[in-house]
Length: 248
Figure 1: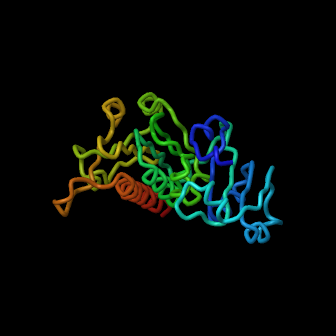
Figure 2: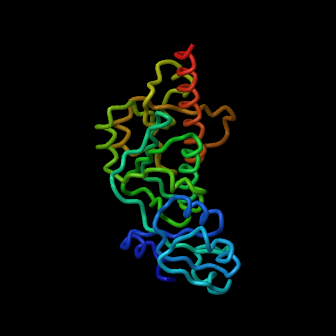
Figure 3: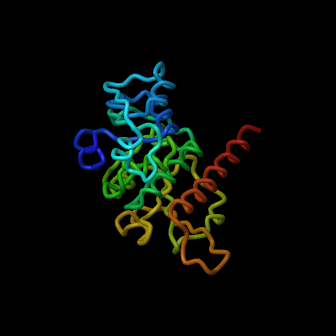
């Protein structure tokens, strides 16, 4: 099982790893096929009736530590098969999140978690964005990876063909508040690389560059996942208000 600490091995077999009771519970609830479980006797005893796995191994804390990708392993390690197929996911929020060359697993996982909070069920990524199945992404997503459709595509090509306005986070954009009127129901929010921003190729497809005003005037930039959260909140709150007005 230790071989699955390598991302390459997981990619080759279309599997991914989750660790800890919280993520294990999310994994069981997701219905994804569980290839293997390695867990302490205590955890296995508590979950004997709620889990179906191809292989189950009782391990000691020391053995669990050798499997873990984290400094502090926690009771259970699971190997799951990845989602497959081209099933359509309902666009509940009206927003699709697009990620261009995001490299930090913590940022990626946090953006998935935030998107999940806002009901964003579709995330489209450039092919050089960090894998949503990276163990640190999975852990930071806090279960969002199980509820979100994540596609890796030729991003400029996808943006060109999507048929939706594309709001791109840019220091050269207009303040997001200036977009208060006329925001379309279905939109794409594009977030760029942590240090370089949106690539030239993807920026060419942006219809509406938007800026979060630097009111403090001192910080150079916002963390990518923080910026994504602020912009998702703004765009979706605006759509929520539009729907309320139409229902009156």
